[in-house]
Length: 114
Length: 110
Image (cartoon, rainbow over all chains, first blue to last red; front, side, top):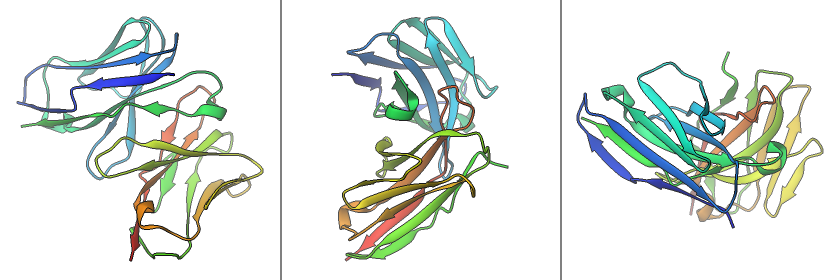
C-alpha cells in the first residue's frame, strides 16, 4: 500500500533562518506531489505542485522554493524565513484520475517562526 | 471572487440531529469535487468524492448542484465523533490542482 511521510512534525525557527521540509511517498511511482500551507484562520493554500522529477510549478510567488530530486521525494525550502511563513505545511500526493481518488495528505509540519 | 467558499460556522449540532452545509465554487467548468474531514491540528482526510448523481456513505450524503455551483454535505444522526472541520475541494481547471475552502466547523453537543 502507498504511504506518505513528512518530517519534522513540529518546528520552531527564528526569523531569517533557513528551512527544509521533506516529504516522501512509498509504494508507488511517478506520483503527483503537492505542498500546501494552512495558516491560522485561513484555508489551504497551494504552494507548489510537481508532476515529475525537476518539474515543479509555483502557485504563489514568495520566499519559498521546492525541489524534487527523486521520483518520490519532494522538498520545501527557504533561505530566510519570515514571520508570515508560520503555518501548517502539508504535503500531498495523488495518482491516476483525480476524480476518483482526490489527494492523500501527509501528517504535516507545524512551523512557528519566532 | 474566491474559487471555493464555505461558511466557517461553527455549526453547533445536538447529538442525534442532522446538519447540512454547502460549499460554493466560482468556476462553472470545475471538475472533481470532494469533501475532506480535518480534525484539530491534523491533516485533512478524504471523506468522500462527490459525483454528479450524488452519493451516500452511511450517515453522510453529498450532492452536487452544477446549475447553482455548489456542493453539499449532510450528516444524519450526528455523533460526538463527527466534531471536526469539513473542507470542500474542487478542481477548477482540470489540471489535477485542488482548491480548498476554509472549512465548515461542526461541533456536536451531547
